[in-house]
Image (cartoon, rainbow, N blue to C red; front, side):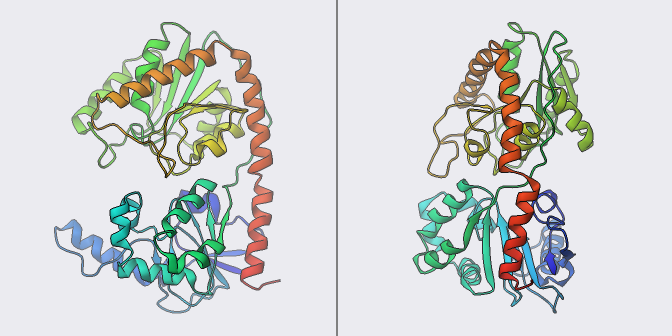
Length: 389
């Protein structure tokens, strides 16, 4: 059986490419009309000119037959006749206007008459769209909520949605060495969006009460639209980090080195403001490092109380923070710092729980993210919908 895919990024590698043995995976990007259209539009916009056509990254249209039995996308919809499925992380269609507007009733009302959205919805109700694989129950719930605004598509699309969490290989649990300090770990490129600033503020106080050492793996990228962070502020933060003897900061590390750090750490930290899933939580749990997270999106599913800790806070109908910082020194940012500090005081005052939850985290990964189980489920889907025995 040949399965086509288009992206070659981290999500595709985690969820699609080479997941099922005996299946030949073929990159069919060069067959995609939109791949070329998007390059032209990108070239034009980089030069201050308007794009030639309305387009979006997450679409597929065959220029000519790709020679595959089926196609497995990540976040994309297909307008071609070849049978297809897609794994998605938030909502379909994953177009910019939908991603930025699905939380606002007024915007959704406008999108119900948008011809590009309707074309994508039409594609999802066609018989050649076989299965829509939501990364989490949270993702499925968001999609079904959006479909309330598209009643003509709701029944058929809802019937195609299944939940399939990403695979993760569990390792044998290893007890941590004490060495006189609690070893804390933060891993994430998007430092500010993932609550890194608030984490640092909390730890500055905590280190006066407990012996701690923080290791960070983060490029500290300035993400578009994140409040209060510009290139000047970023350089100041980077210089400050380099001067701290209680922090080891790596801008980047090979994955095997990150795994070594996880296996040495007592506690992982992801006090995130925005995340579609939380892959770093899986990697930490798989290596016996329990995690303190917020409770947005999929995190209540993948970081339950028996194997980690979650910060209590209110969420909106989409499972996200009701309010995010509007400035670097906003009140909501200060509150998160205070709550992180409160939680860490409790956690580090009961060190035996770190060991217990680390062991349970490994057991959870073995039970709920086993790569063999994930591959078997995908294999069943492929053979059922692409008609290969």
